[in-house]
Image 1: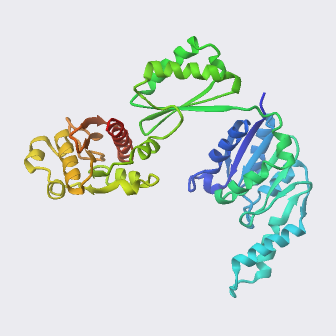
Image 2 (image 1 turned 135 degrees about the horizontal axis):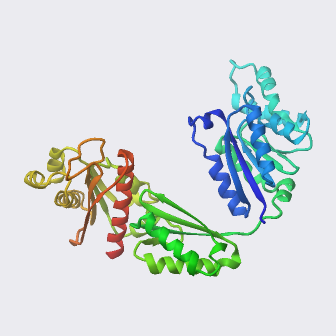
Image 3 (image 1 turned 180 degrees about the horizontal axis):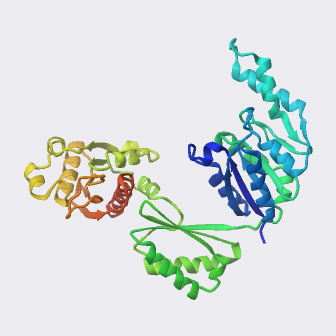
Length: 421
């Protein structure tokens, strides 16, 4: 069995949802890269009894390494190091050299400010130089050092701010204590297939068949996730099971080839960015309020290919800014395929682009009708040579979900138009 690890994310602000946990997923990915099996991620407040309960739980699960994040500051509620020392049966001792290094950091941070009593500040931060006896100190990235406490399990204590935790991680994994803790790790490979336009139920049926028909299927660890209308199929496997993974991909390709847009994990955004060379893009948006234009502009280097965009909610704006005929809106309604096509025409004409993407829809929370309920969105991608992709979708979810799904659909339609050009 591979080396196993657990993660304890501390912080009442994380537990209550005021701050989103970024450290747990990031450390989980790094453990996967190392070939370490992650058993659990737990989140608890800054109470010592709760932190210790998580440590004892993970130790009882038989993990080789526990990684904690948070609770390393100078304030009274930062108690992770003291709690870990007690859990590991070690005394806290003052590392005078570390204390001086922290003081130097504080001197640089405070500069020439005269409103700060530096000796009082230094005394308050002395707590951060108290480390478990026999622990390896990880030099501060901010002002908080980390520590590695060897044992069974070994405990790696990291700061809470991601900008401090992430650089410190690379130092931590090179320490003797961490290397020994994960010595039993197994090398893993990971593959990712991305699909668009396939319901989860269709994939579930295929995976059930794969379990029956693909020899060695039980050697694959498969995770599926539906994100903004796209299916991600992530598979982890040991190197000698590479052939089994290829058999799975062949089955997915045979059953759902038209839905697969990525077999190397690349995002649709990455693929659109790679296809933009030689093109100029214009957008015309209603219900998405400029989200598509922003997404395209955010692509690496893609701003050079963006001719312009218009956000037109009101019918009058569609008429005046994009030249959509008023009688077309009156006949078909603002949320309709003919109006989406006219919006794309207007974007092509007004911005001098060779590809235009138009979106018009009802994102909610109100405004829907029986024939066009909330979530009805019409799309058009039109090239200057006249080639056109038009479609209507009824999307589930609240306003935010409809808007996000709409931009993803538009990106896939744009990808198709660029591939065909």
